[in-house]
Image 1 (cartoon, helix red, strand yellow):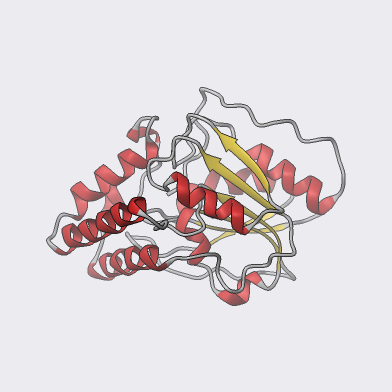
Image 2 (image 1 turned 135 degrees about the vertical axis):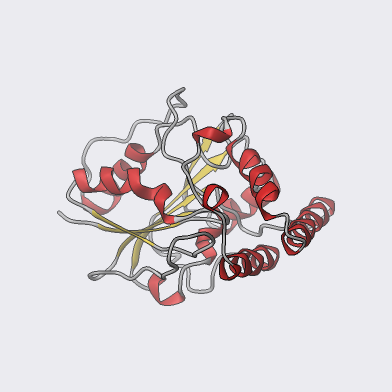
Length: 248
C-alpha cells in the first residue's frame, strides 16, 4: 500500500538531506515529498499532499515551517530533534535568546559563512562536520536566502508551543538527540509535555543532526506498523557507529 510522506528540514538545512529517506520510502512503494525554505541555492517551495494525506516528518524548526493547511491531512507525525519552545523559560531561555540575537547580528554584518560553519559543527557534534551532506554552507546564499535565514532566526525566538493547526489526534513519534547542542534540554522537555501521548525515542550520545544512528528504517517501520497494519513488533532503536542520513 502506498503512503505519502512530507518532510521539512530545519534552520540552515535544505531538502537534499532527505534523499536517503526518499530512497528508503521508495523501496517500500511509498512517496516522499520535501519542502524547501531556500536558504541557499535550492528553489523555495511549500510541499503539498499529492493525495488524501499521509505522514509528516520534520527536523527541528521544520515543525513551524509547514503551512497550516498541510497539517489537516496528516495521519501521523515524526518530530526529529525538535522542541516545544525553542527559547525555554528562565535563565537558560535568556541565554538562548541572546545567542539568537548574536547570530542575527553576525549575519547582518556579513559573517554568514563562518557562522554557518560554527552552527553546523555544533549541530553535527559529537560527530564530525564532514559527515553532514552538502548544503548552504558550501554553496553560499543570495540576498533572498539571507533574508529567510534572518526571518527564521526570529521565528525560532517566537516559537512557543506547537503550531495551532498541529493534529493532536494522530500518532506522534518524538526522536530526541540526547547530546543535542542546538535544542536545549528544557525545550525538548516542553515538547514531551505538549504531546504526552507520543512515543519517545531518546538517543543518548547523539547530536542534533542525528548522525551515528541508523534511524531511517526504524522510523519507517514505526509508520508502517502504526498506519498500514500491525506487522512485526518494532525493535528498540540502538545507537550505531555507522552514520545515517543527516538533517539540516
